[in-house]
Image (tube, rainbow, N blue to C red; front, side, top):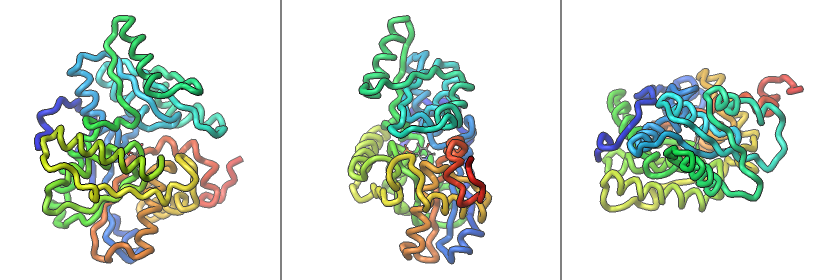
Length: 339
Ligand SMILES: *Cc1c(COP(=O)(O)O)cnc(C)c1O
């Protein structure tokens, strides 16, 4: 499996640290918890999209593009990391941002990742109600072409087989780090939404004699939709890197039990999980993705899903800028009313 054969833009600080969480493991009475710090990938506050963008931007440059176009929710971390990657590689960057159905305050509309997107110089377009994201991106691409530019469309979350290559690499990196630290990883836990982080991890561990179980806590759409998408991207990514024999269905485990009432909707379990990690390890999660995935992990531990001797790696996929637009969700933890 040769990742070196693919064009790649040097964007991420790699390898990211793999650290034991000794205090929290002790507090919970096992398993042995570790955290993979992909919140420290280095690009404009980091996160998981940076690994994908190394390959996506590499492909865009190889294709001779001068403008990247992508899309996401208003507080999308993916758009922010894409804007930063584009700036560094001297590409123009355009976003299609999708308004949530619910009303939100001005912090949500202008703060967090939106502020960073503007600082990074991305052009922000808002999706017209009734329009769909893909056709909106294609329309922008046509107008770039009409003015003599070369557009490159990156899907939501960077989730296609090329983006997944970033997490094929992350799986190899994890295996190497665990070897150096002298333990075998029994389980990797991640937040899953657009899916290609999990797809890449699944593909990266295919065929390894020490392949861990991988659990994706789905924070996005219905489990069946997300599971199908993770598998579809994994199958295509496996083909891309030349793995024969396909991807067994049972390697793609998607659990949406901790999503709550919907994408981006805070839950009590998320607030509790975020507080636990902060107060035992000094590491901060985000409310939309990693907080809910960590709540899923805590619940599995309390249900006795793991043996006390298991080595479990939580993948921290970033998302810190959106924490600051969810201030009012943390009253229980902070003791301070939000208004
Ligand atoms: C995008 C994102 C995820 C989900 O990753 P996918 O590859 O889209 O499934 C998880 N955590 C954070 C912080 C993200 O920004």
